[in-house]
Image (cartoon, rainbow, N blue to C red; front, top):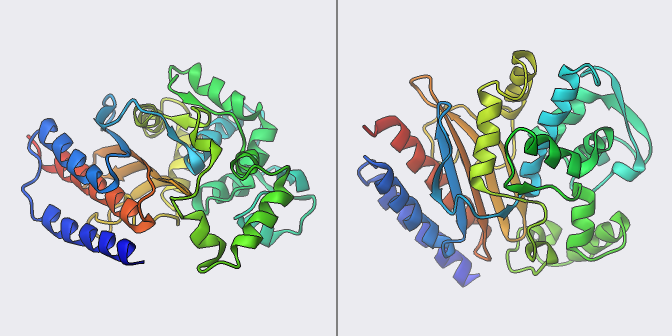
Length: 328
């Protein structure tokens, strides 16, 4: 506890010093700032940006693979909406949610009993993004071509630095080395007996897991920025479906202390977070006051305290925001 508090205090002190610095007036200065911020988690961070339709700009480890965690849900939603655009699916059609789709940490499980039910496709996409529901992407992947279908979809559009190998349920099963989702539920039920319960356990970066030992279910910050830029620029979906997903992502309720954490009050942010043990991520876009859009992806893979990693994301987002606004 003492180390956690001292680390968080160091972040707070650094945040005050950071906001008092002169705004980065060049990309080299911004990268130096981001590198300094990244040292709070031992440099175990990746971040890239793009400004108003430009190419991805790596800030730190832009070409390094990081676990998606729930940030993959944006990609799944894009492919689902493409199928709506192509007439294969409809946003208001009832979608079956089966017991086999159900995961953990999911509002769908609280809304419906463990069993087959239906809800409109729009609701499935909405809850997968806004509340980061873990059952919803399993439903969507089942309706399409599975995880590898998501990967292929973006490969065909020129994004290759990613690997989508499992749905969220199977990722959790593999992470905890159990046989099925009931094993995951039992595992987390045991952790509920610990101080802080299963929630604190899930945010504990010291937990070892095999999911960090390969490039499966990973993406680079550069690749994520490229995908998000394709979305906001209307280059992957038509205008109607683009506006649907932009509206949904700008309603996201998770991760308020990440990309949004140090931005001016009222700044519009569309984003999708990703969280679990060593991974604390946030990916999306920031609407600038002059009408431009800053696309940004920040990933961390670290054993440092959860609050520290969130603060790192917030500081990198603010540094990028100030650079976009005030650099010449």
